Length: 400
Ligand SMILES: *Cc1c(COP(=O)(O)O)cnc(C)c1O
Image (cartoon, rainbow, N blue to C red; front, side, top):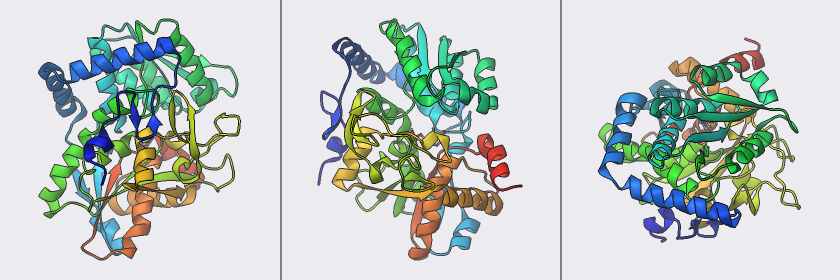
């Protein structure tokens, strides 16, 4: 079997097996290498580790608990379902884990501005929060269409002091926001930093963001045996770019008896533009600065994608997931919008926990799997975020 080091550590060019790398112009490669070097140096110092550990504990509220969903398990029948409660973090999801890491790194590197795009505003709010905390200017690019749709998050970013750029070109959504933010970054990449929102983009971001999120897996590996006397049979997480999944998977990679399951959005069907199940239906390709499975047209342009959970509608996936898929160390399944909505309502009404629509995908998979397993089997679901942001939308969908 491939050693855990090989599964975890990219090579010197940033490849996990054939995936990853730095598909960017030469001058940007140099800057990415500087970030990689600064990250490796700083992350090994005690001061940085202490600073991040203290923020995780006293600011984010870590460790997040693991909760046995007893009533939901009884409802499904079969295996016991446990939840890693990332929804209880400050700002309501796992994204704060890597945004704090990126903001601290930016401060240590003397960067003068943190730039990013946001789709539904989740990454924007988490990053604006982290930048407020470390005292760095933050500039968030967001499509005008998304700005009109996502009022609470837009307001939060403004309150937190971020500069919000409304992007009015093209379809005025995420893709155009990425282009706009990247152009702003290229004006001065030496002094600015582009804070990528998942385990995607050129090296070192897939490795770095994974490291910041790996706190989830380290905690879970210690907590689960304390609770049950053993490790789980399955660890499941939703996969958009793949950061919350890589975070929890990384705690269990060296335990072959623990099966790792990534859950992608099957959306409303398998036609182009109706889903975002990259690992289930995509092919290896290159875009956004890295090589991975992608949903691409023959010209290499990203295909349109859809999911009821806006945090999952990305036409590629982190390179480490592509590698884990090819090696068979993780399996990837797709869950559609309807099953997601059903899981959302079930968890709300049976356990009194309103999950994010993203997280409800992983939960839906667990609810389908549990009845196939016997009563002493355990499934640990990473509940990546809470559903406050989705409440109005779901109520409208269901006519509540
Ligand atoms: C953004 C988001 C995701 C998707 O991002 P990953 O990088 O795949 O983890 C999942 N869940 C929640 C709650 C999110 O906000």
